[in-house]
Length: 193
Image (cartoon, rainbow, N blue to C red; front, side, top):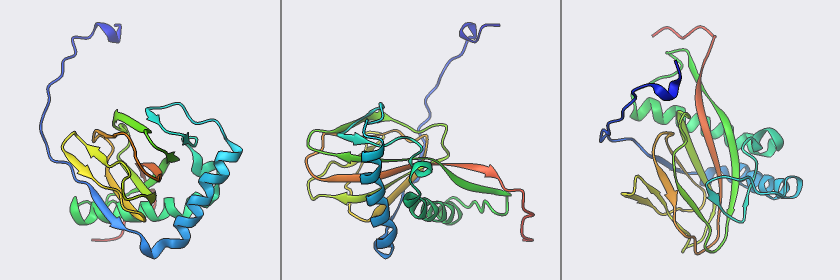
């Protein structure tokens, strides 16, 4: 049977999805290394990656595999999202024999008039944006056309990968590291409850 011939239909369901945020002022070293990594990637991989991001520069999707200065921030993001899912989604992944891993990581440098069109990160379980730099008048991130979050420097925002979001025209300095995180089986024995 041809998949295009399937009588597939769609319905929309309104639901609430969580957005987590945290100030990362205690992680100056990791944030500075990530910023340096973006500059280094811009030299080693100067072509911006084609995508829905319309910015002066976007590094490759797997930048964390190209520059290990991103790994401390990736590791911290895994810890933050794992804790957020435990606290706010009532899910302790270690007890379920799952662990999160960063599967994609990229940096973006936005200049005046740069944007990102409406999209989501499905099939990623979670996505995260770390604001390395965020000028006073930089563009917000807009979720599902209803929640507007103004970026602050040294802040992380994490959310389910299926959540629609976009960035309108930018007006100020805005440099981010974005990541997709996915669950993978953890074959270590789970701790007793």
